[in-house]
Length: 105
Image 1: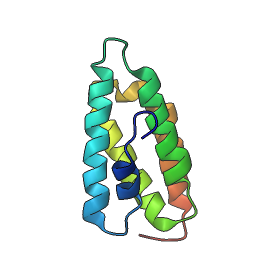
Image 2 (image 1 turned 90 degrees about the vertical axis):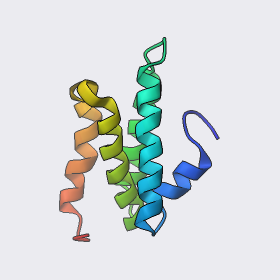
Image 3 (image 1 turned 60 degrees about the horizontal axis):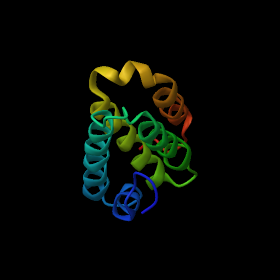
Image 4 (image 1 turned 135 degrees about the vertical axis):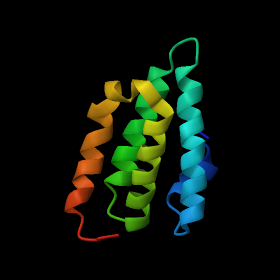
């Protein structure tokens, strides 16, 4: 897979089955934690992950992608832990845009 992603995680995020999206989200949380512990700080990986989750998933026209993006962003926030406040500019806009979603789920 390219960058910090595996094909399995990307497929899992967009799966119709909640449990598969949840499993992918747990992998995202672990990847974020791993990136933050990197000697280089991992901020480029974190930014790439958050951008992809927001742009390609949470803002998607497909509802399963949006659901995957939201659970992925939630997992990423958990992975960021006490560093989450530094990433609010990447986390909040895609989440807030989902409030205008016509699909109530």
